[in-house]
Image (cartoon, rainbow, N blue to C red):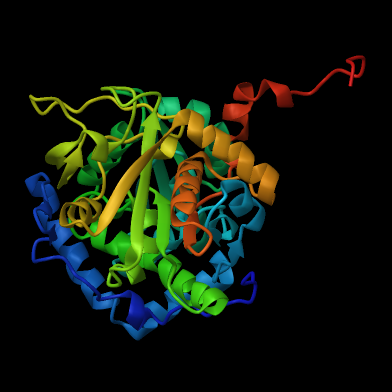
Length: 421
């Protein structure tokens, strides 16, 4: 049975105010607020306004209205029967975040934070982006709400995500390339935070993942939890129960924590995050924090990160720009430490194979980030067997990646008319 009928979004009361961190933003030993003195007051103001507005019916009504009429929620659930057959195991259901406006889950959080910023009187937005999807989502909601938008992006990521750079500029955003460091997401975050420090009065920082200083990890999880609450209602319609396993790719961790949210309290559901295994689990050749990371502080939060024995942040590498980051959200670190979640990793080669297979078997081209989750879902499906059910977040579509990976599929290149068939 394939669930195609729409399911209503969970009421805001089910998505907000659940499992708040300890005072100061602590998820166990992870989280907190490690920022310059100049940012303490702005973050305290942000926290106070967020806690006020998340229980304000007018704010929540506007957010849900725009999720429905602008973002296109609820996104459907799709049973990937041909992909599951190829896996040789459990039934596989895909939560279709690729069908949300702008092509990925990022729009959910961008919309929520932009509405919050407008309520706070901020007319200028700064953001960071890796794969470009958060940048596109931010530029989109700024165009919708009439806000000034500046997006910082690593120069390397700009090269491999040129389509999204054009989309951001078309939407009216200023895109600033970052040449320092590894020229990727970590460096873009640094520059966005520097910009914010310099213009606190009129600027809001719209952070794209479940990272950074409190209250960002909480806000991002709550804005993204609409994914999981919809998916749980939809899977119950399809099979009458919770799935056996829930799988999502993990960079900073926003799509995963949003999907995991309603299932965390059911210990029978396996929650599995999938990181970027790169070309090898060796220093500088991957971005799998749970396969070699240690606790430390990076960009405002204490979490699990890739660092050497002296605390220097290690370089990362992944075919996927959105997973190419040295740290992970603090709530993910806490959930792993408690044993509630597990984390695997998929290599570049495995992700590229999943990228092609899902396209050919289901007519769905996944984002490279998402392809990591799809790759490991195969393993989970085989392990669970034919009586199992796996729910996977199809967190974004792969249009943005086609040009950057075309050279890896030479057999798909265009033939000249004179070539033999």
